[in-house]
Image 1 (cartoon, rainbow, N blue to C red):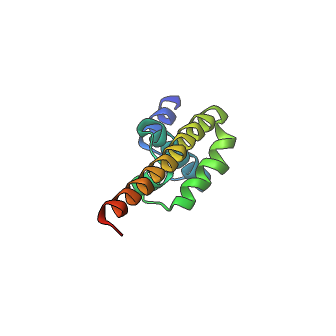
Image 2 (cartoon, one colour; image 1 turned 60 degrees about the vertical axis):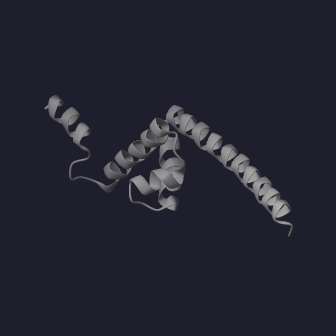
Image 3 (cartoon, rainbow, N blue to C red; image 1 turned 30 degrees about the horizontal axis):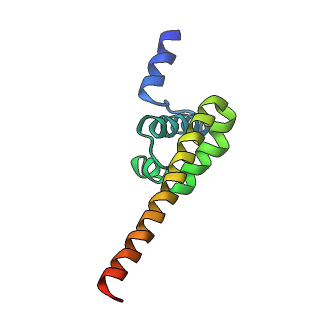
Length: 104
């Protein structure tokens, strides 16, 4: 019987409690973020869930299930957040330069 439980983990959760499904999806989303260095938005899109649900899984469940993986995911998300702010600044500078060149 011990072999059956490990086999079911590789296929995903069997029909059981909702908590098993939530736990499985939480680890799947966290693994996706770590593997692809993705944002919450990209992970949510990949799993066809809302950003709110992805945030909920990560911050509510992963923080309790696996603190180490939670810290790693938060590091990736924080890097993405800083990068977003940098890209925003580049976009504003480019827009100003285009306005200046067009004479408006």
